[in-house]
Each structure stands twice: as C-alpha cells, then as structure tokens.
Image 1 (cartoon, rainbow, N blue to C red):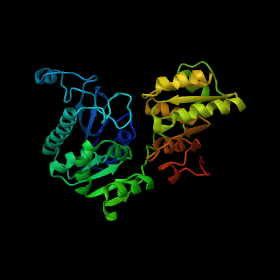
Image 2 (cartoon, helix red, strand yellow; image 1 turned 180 degrees about the horizontal axis):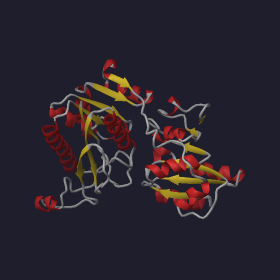
Image 3 (cartoon, rainbow, N blue to C red; image 1 turned 135 degrees about the vertical axis):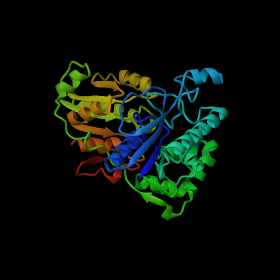
Image 4 (cartoon, helix red, strand yellow; image 1 turned 30 degrees about the vertical axis):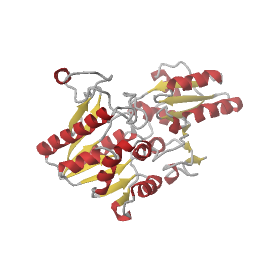
Length: 352
C-alpha cells in the first residue's frame, strides 16, 4: 500500500512530529511505500527511509515579493505556527494574520495535490483535526485523521479554523483518537457518530526508548555539567503553561528542603523558559539544570539515568514522554490528567 502522511510540524520537537516519524518507519518495516509532508524552517539533512516533501518557511516573518520568496526556496514567508510552542518557532495559529492563515491553507492544499499527483497514494493519514485533513479532502484521496488533543484546544480558541476542521472531520473515513479523554472530547466538540471514531493509543519507538548503558556521571559529563547526582529527577517537555513546568519547579523547593541531594534535570524549551529560570532563582534552587531541547537519543539516556521522571501537566492529551520513560525502565510520577491515567498506575509509578 502507498501511504501519504501529512503533519503541520517538523518530525522532531513535538509529539505529533515524533508520532508521524514512528508511524512512517513502522509502515516501511511492514513493506508499505511511504511519503511524508511536513513543515520546517530549517533544512533537515537526515537520511530517512521514506520519500518526503518539506514545506519550507522563513525563520522570521518576512515581507517578501514572490520572486524573492522563490529565490530563497521558501514556500511560506513566515515561520510555521503552533498550537502551543515549538523549539523552532514562536508563531502560533492564533497570532498569525487572516492573510497568513489563507496562505498557509493554500500552501498545504497545493503541495498535497502535487504530491498526490506524483506519488498516487492509496490513503492519506493526516495529523490533527485542523488543516491537513482539509488538504487531504481536496485531493480526492480517502483519508484518516489522528486527533492529538492540542488541535481540540485550538478549535476552542480560534473560530477561523472551524470550517477546515469540521469538513476534515466529517469527510474522514476514520477519526483516530489517542486517549479516552481525547476520544470523549472529540465526540463532544465535533458531534460525530461514535462509529466514525477509533480509539488507538499512541505507541513509541521501543528500539530508541529502552534502558541504556549510561550512568548519572556519564550523562552529566555529556551535558557538560560537573556534578554526580545522588538522586535524579527528569522532566522532558515544552516549557508552556499546560505542561505544568512551574508546578514542578515549585515542588522542587519542597522536595529539596527534605531531601537536599535530589537533582532536577529539565529538558525542553518554550516561551516560559526565561520565566522558569527566574522562578528558580527566586526560590533559591541550585540543583535544577535546564538542558534545553535534546535529541531523542539524549532524552532516552536522561530517562535511563533518572530515578524518576515527572509529568506535571495540567492538560495532557496522551503523554508520550511518560510512556517513553517507562520504556527506559524509569518510574513515572504524573498528574491525573488527560491520557496519563490510561497507562500510569501504581505498578509503574504514581498518579497525583
């Protein structure tokens, strides 16, 4: 079978990007032909086993005429928008102009049609109930769409996208949901018949996320930090409000008051990074290390070396970071939110 995957984001830096990459790689292993449409503001030189068309964006919003845009090999003269935050873009779907929304939608439609004409897929798998399923609809190819949860947050926040999301949902062959919470929220928001939806929880790359042969000393040396933690707590995620990074930092103050030897390693980036560093200074915490955005390989090493991984989300559609940490053999302490209760329990960690 020939499968076209479409996502609004790069293949790294977001849960749906990693999901798309994992699905593509697994389909290839099963003998299918795969083509991926993604978007980025940086050239990804990795050698993937599938065909790919990346919608190229400007890193900064530019006022370019058509000729200059073409000279720079750009498809969009502004950076790609996000539902929350991304290591490579500060734009959101809510702060781009009406003209930019129109250009963004048009670009996805036209590039999807171009790829369909050349690749001739049997089916399209769109990510997010947003623009990509609408682009799939215009191509005339049967399609399914996976709801990742942040798209539901966006649907509640900006009515400009309702037409695209609704038409994409209504005309999909199947709407895939990644957790019971996302499943129920999709039914409530889109009023779809139950039989159109299919609950299919996320998987993870179990070749990448398995126990590694690395010590705390080796890990921190790799990050250029000259300490050997006695007890290590890890966090991996976006520095955004709904991920609850502030909750973790405030909790760290209480934990270290009782257990001074505990060290916190926080991997990720986002619009709250500066604010969280200020909060850490205000609380006089000296045992928190901000690692920034890390590769999947280094994240797996961090999980393995950690004694516990924490997912303090206020809202969490699924919780890929939690299941990846469990794959590395690390217990998880997580909030009782969204998809986390589907797989975090007293056997593998603790819900709070």
